[in-house]
Length: 570
Image (cartoon, rainbow, N blue to C red; front, side, top):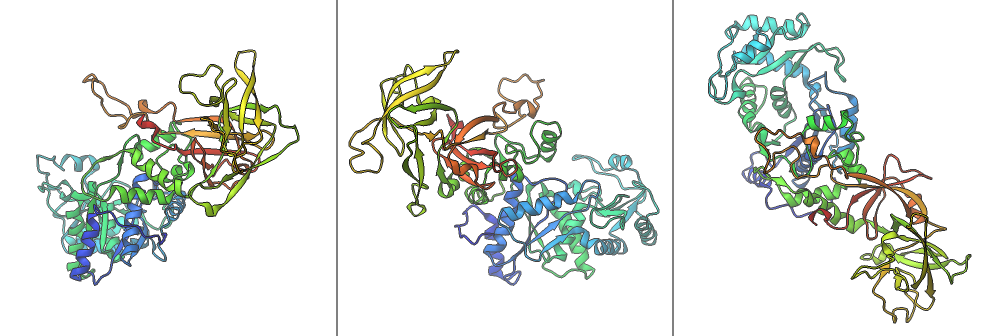
């Protein structure tokens, strides 16, 4: 992660816990965290919060953050996702050093510790089918019922578990369960599953295993094996914490782990307006073709964010701004967009783009004349210097910068009106042409050659209008994609005031039909050869990034990252 120092947010209660632990000497000043994604999909904005939290704490307190893949479900995991996740974490600026781990690294020890639980009378093999187990689990108001196999002997349980491991039984025949309390008010403690039979090829271990550990068991044991001090997870796992501690306490009593044991701490997940972060819904968006893949710039995935031009620094600023708490709340998308806007304002060089080109002919400029005008690369950073913008007889201007019959308060180009060409001269409109449909096709003007910007006395003549332009002979044509929020309402799929009681809303009905459009635009020449992922502010229009997939020499493609201001507030 970048070594840039940022004052941590006061609302990060986890920092207070870490500092209290350090003050008490609980871990001897040591801090180890982990980011443990399942390699069964692509990371989204919510994962960015967890990544930056875990790696940031480790960095700020001189500790280590482990990168660990929770690869315990072979039917849904692929190496493609492993590679994509590692790329995204690196893109956010995080470094795990030598601590790249997989739960599958621990399969032998997880299996051995399961036998320890059996030998201690804390686990048994249940031979009920899934339907029977669901029927005896109970409800939130009614206790569950003991399995008829709950009191099998330790010897029989060990024998069956080892035969499960050896591959003697088909899927679903047996399952290893923890023996806790079927009457517990916490459903997670009603004899949860530890191991299930699954004859499936694993992307790392191949066909070596046909039983796989369940998340609640594998996760806490992996934490202990890696000497994790603070195991950070979102609030939906709060009710799982007693089970996390139950497993580790019994394995510590058996001599496998020393105390203090890893501490699970829950924080609120990211809930962001105008988007969905449910993996199921994101998959639906992709599979049904509502978006153009996982890296569609409108998708709230890190792949999509990167392609849209969002920055790691913007995500870090966002996390610092919203803080870390235990209270679930809906964060307005404008906060994230403002953070990206603030970061890009500081780092993005300025360039001129004409998104709706209209031809302007300067009638008193010779056809072969090229006038060198100069524009700052960044108005707040003079050290970045200036660039030359050539002015010629024929220019491109924005169509909205000319109005045949101007409305009140319109100060741009009009018949017989004057404006300044930004970084150039004052011009006066002398006429215009229309096409067969009655649309203005060309504007004519004369240049006052004594008014060039930056020359002595050039500012003595004042005009109210100031418009952008590009030399028609030098500009490059590009595809510019106007990317916007994927959904048109703050809470996609939610009921709204006035809805009939029987109405059920589908989040897909709230997709913003204007979330993506494309236009033929004219850009400064250097933008045609810029590297993919180069970010610029197109003056007047917003921040844009050269598309990392489609932008190439001879085919310039830019995506809008954010506007210059919050257009959704209007």
